[in-house]
Image (cartoon, rainbow, N blue to C red; front, side):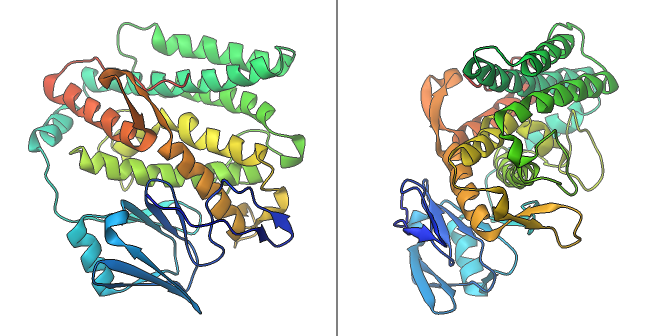
Length: 366
C-alpha cells in the first residue's frame, strides 16, 4: 500500500491533509490504485517498476505495489509497459474524458465455463427475472437508507424529504412483496418510480448553491450530476472487471437484459452499489468543502457540465475511499473492502445461476 505525500495548496485553496493527492502527474490512493489523469503523461517500464513521466516530472512505482490502474485519455503506455502489465495480471481500465468506461487490458485468467453456460440458459426466464428483482431490491433498500439517514439529520422536519421517503417505500413494496416474479416491464416501471422518488429526496443532501434538482445526464447539467455521472462511470469500470473475474459474459444481463453494445450484466450487478459507493462519495466530497461549483467547466458541446481537472483528482480520492472502506460482509462473517465485496457479490450471483438457487441478497447500507 502506498500514498503520495500531501501537496499543501492548489491555487489559493488548502487541501485537507488526509486526502491523497499529487499535483499534475498522477495520484495514488489507498489499496494500490493508480489513476493517470493528466494528458501528456507517458508510462514506461524498466525492470520491475513503472516510470510515470509528465513534462519535467518523473516518478517510479513498483509493479508489485499495484493492483489497479485507471487511465484517462491523453496518457500513453509504451508497448513494454503494456506487456508487463499483462504479464503481471494488473487490472488496467481505460475511461473516456467524462469518466465513462472505455475498455480494459485483459491477460489470460482462470474461468469456469459452467457459469457462462448457466448465465446463457437463464436469460429471459422466470428465474432470471426473479434474480433481477433481487438485484433491484438491493439498490432500492440502499437508496431508502441513505434518505432516511438525511431525514434523521434534519430531525424529521423536512416535509419534502419525508414525502420522498414515503413514496420510495410505497414503490419499493411493490417490488419486495411480490412472491411471483414481476415482468421486466413491471420491474422497470417500479424501479423508475423508486428512482424518481430517490433523486427527489437526494437533493436535500446538497446546498441550494449546487443547483441539484434531480437526476439528469447525457450531458449532466449541474455539478452534482456531473460528479454522479463520473462516479457511475468509474463504478461501471470496476464492476466490469469483477464480472469478468467472476466468470461472466458482461454483456448478457437479467434486468437490463440484452440491449446491443451495452454491458447489461454489469449494469445489473452495479445497481446496489450506486448509493453505497458513488452517491456517498459525492455527498462526502461536497460536505468536505474541498470543491465549489467553480471547480466545474462547460462540456465541449457547451450543453452540459464537466468535472474540472482538480475536481477530478479530489473526487477520485474520495471515491477510492469508498472502494477501500472495510465493512462486515455477513455471508462470510469477515471484514472486506467494498472492492472485494463487489467481487464476492458477483460470485454469489454465479453460484445462484449454476445451482439454480435464489438465495441472493443485496449488500445493505447500515
